[in-house]
Length: 620
Image (cartoon, rainbow, N blue to C red; front, side, top):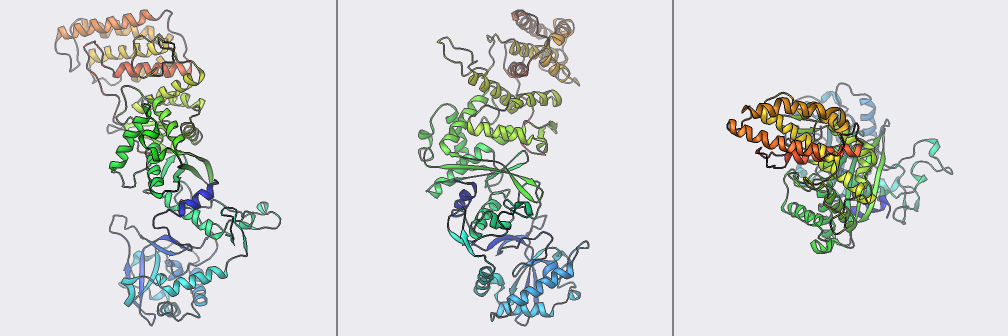
């Protein structure tokens, strides 16, 4: 199924879908008219929130404007309706004259009370009469609708049956000759200009075009604009309406992956089943809950089901209705001047998506686990961005997520393919630069290494000869991998420093030497071991410690004995000296070994620790 065809099908199950020819727009004020065209009142329709947000109202569909002058039917901005705008407004007189002229033409033959009242208002209105208190200053640059004084509570002028009938006639008069629609296959008038799509991060706030032809180079066989790829007006309206709804921040169908505003939706014969599939997909991808920040009971249950999938339970046992007959779609859109680029489009069976996501969860599963073991694709892509700790919270600069790598990461997860080769290097580079090794970032590093090993047939074997699929899952003192052992050794050296000097020091061994030790261990470890022995362990053996958890001198000596034994045994277990340089994969294994040793409870007398700072997926 094509992208546009699937969006048109989604329109049929869109809750409160606007009818063809209408769209939901932000309306700030309503001008209430008497029958003679005089103004009875000016009603403020904005909300009571701090921003005084305009109300979303269903109005006749907005015309598409760039630099051209084109009024909307029965509503528009204050510059069009009243000839009043902000200080920097241009062409106010021209646009107001166009609004009056077009409505005089449209309303000429009407006998409806409301439409006649509007015609009389426009005939007698002068911008000079815009004075308070009747006309508030806040109306400038706001969208305005009209209503009759005795029918205001029943609806606006554009809601009257006569207005709707007139709008249909206006649309029919401007329609082109019927052609075969490439989306639906039906013969219908073709959209010359497709509706604007709003809500794509970085695109114009007024909206951008997904399909457009506006240069001579795009002209084929004499066809102009939309005739080059015939899409009916109804199909263009349907797909644009769905995208505008899904791209809304609180739609529950949207996530930001790098510079790609990504939407997803499901398709099946049962409407409630499609909605359930979209809730599952939202949990996998990391979409904002439709209920806001609060998580619903259904979404909590979905997370438990995803953990069951990770542990090997098949989808047909967890959610048998979702296992077959449900299709899922993902579309990533990025800005391109006044147009939109399709960054990626993926369509597949929901059962396949669930299986691939379960494979991803198994690959990144690790102990100690993140607070939320089911961390979303959005959370994973954010870990490729620079990070910093502010007020005890971990913040990621979402604007610096690599568009290419984030898209490839998403594609690898949803398709079960190999992760992009450059991603592991980028994550290691981020750790070297910002010194942040949180639970999700290290789990992603582990998952990248494990998937490569699994696909290349390099996984260590169990005693029965089978692949060790739990490799790197938890701390393993018996793993002979040198890079992972060196990571454990570095964690023990840091533990000795903290035991001797306490947590109040300005910079730990990790802050100064983690990146260098991971990349060039042969150059760094001899000095680290000498410093740990001659300063930190010696101080502990003498019964001295600034750590709060060291009870007395005897306790300090016991900790020194345990750490000295572990450090000596681990260094001796390395058959050769530490290599001068590590590959990118070996640096990742070093970080995994360090992290697991750093936050695992050991028999050295040191207390167990919680992994890393508080995590926050907030994009900056």
